[in-house]
Image (tube, rainbow, N blue to C red; front, top):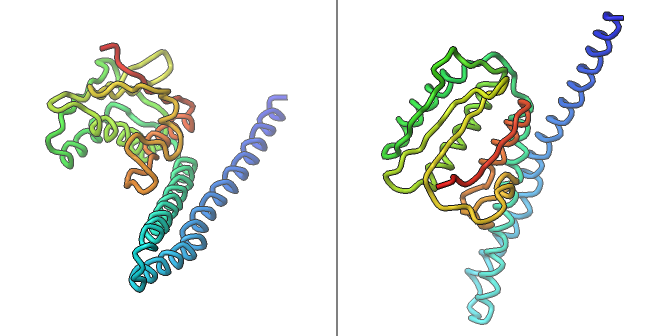
Length: 232
């Protein structure tokens, strides 16, 4: 009976692997479609609007031309954001899990982050006990924690210290990033959605994918992501 059950589990895993492979392939195709097939006609529209702007001398048309140009920029930006979102999900799903010493990973990440971000105060707090190992993809996990650190730095008060804390909670590992900054006055769950950002409009350089990727990574590894205001 045990052999039969193991065989069934192997078959189920194989089917799930095939499903995941097809989904990742679809995500990549969608990203490519958005970049090439959709951006081309948008570029043509943009060129036409620019030509009208250069050749038209009718002042009454200028507000409409400017509005059309802004609309094209907004659509272009949305295409780029949707393409990056599909790339992000494919990036997370194709990760290869391996045993990781979280304390070591955070020390390395903190060191490289401080080298490239001067003027930002970070403090790393690690458990005093034995190394805390998890099964995860290191590159994917680094990307998620880097996004948390970058988000905390963006909204931190001047001269404040951003804390990166590693804790053990039963059989789970918990990574916390704490910053002193403005209070979030609305539903924090909205910030985990794709394209959600308090800094982004349709044409903003902020794609609103940082926390979206954090949640993707957490859930892909059987965890969860939460954001909340501090008591103080």
